[in-house]
Image (cartoon, rainbow, N blue to C red):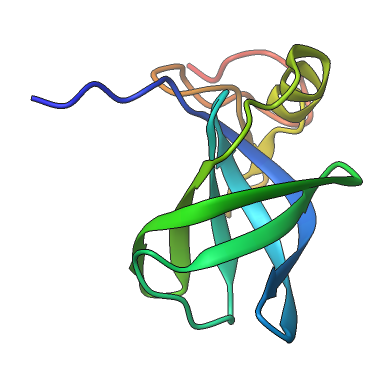
Length: 116
């Protein structure tokens, strides 16, 4: 079994560049060496891309791609301060609640505490 570094859900806008093309996207999860991105850009496993992670350029290789979402293994780790900031950008769910992190219960956005 292959080890996978922990990932945290997030919601951060990004700009993705591949060759001469560029698209907007959203970082939907983040780990120290990788990001999950949702975008209309068509990519395939093995493609080299460059994306912005909170205004910092990051280059990496697409590891998987399916249905408008893809995972990128970054050439360099994300600095801990940037990673901490991304972890704090909680992803809003369809019902208005926010997701704190993997394995935790959604929080009630209006009350700021876990839902019962």
